[in-house]
Amino acid sequence: MRRTAVILVGLTTLAFSGLGMAAAHADKPPKPPKVTTCTSTLGPGTFHDVVVPSGVECIIAGGTVIQHDLTADNPLLLVLGNDVGDPVQIGHDMTVTITGPSEDILVCNTAVRHNLTVTGGASSTGIGGTDGCASSVGHDLSVLGAQDLEIRTVTVGHNLTGDGNVGFSFEVDDNTVGHNLDAEDNNAPFTEIARNTAGHDLVAEDNNASSIEIIQNTADHDVLISGNHASSVHAGENSANHDALCSDNESFSGNGNTAGHQNTCNS
Image (tube, rainbow, N blue to C red):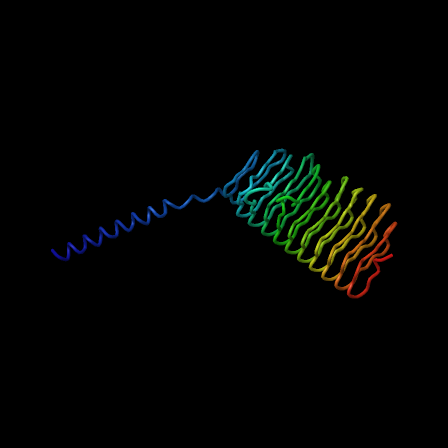
């Protein structure tokens, strides 16, 4: 009889433990769907992968967490974050490809853990900015063939590349880059590369514009400015721990540039 009672008590204890475990599991929030499609507004909330299809307007609210990738294929409009409140967080890559008519790509107050890549020309592309829009990219930030590009106040873990961009303006200002900052083959009448810090090289080569201003940048290794064509190419107050080399630039003027080794950027 005593043995039967002990067994019953044990079974009762297990039953209640099972109920407790079931309740604990029931309290866990459900996992987000594997893929979420944005066709208007999204968030705040938590999502795994987010896809923006062609021809739609997608606005992703501040405080939204995308655990893995954000992929946009020819969106009509793509806006991330705002200048107040919590940032948009992307756990892996953000990839935007523009192959047809598109309005603006605007990235404000957003943290991308790995790579941010924009290929092709929306009406304008803005990444980061002032007044609360400062953003970060954990590895590489690449913008290739965009139009009216502004990259401002972005912290980049490895390389920042702006190549082959067109439109009225190309502005890369006030960024902190872990390795190389590279601006090549851009064709925008107003081109400015200003007040950036590069952990290795800062390169501005073969750009075409009416005015090119490369000023107040700092490179832990080399500043390399060559083959740029404009009515005025000006390099002023740039600093390189190793070489500052300027060559084959049209209508070039340079002043206040410093280097730890060779310096050919003052005229």
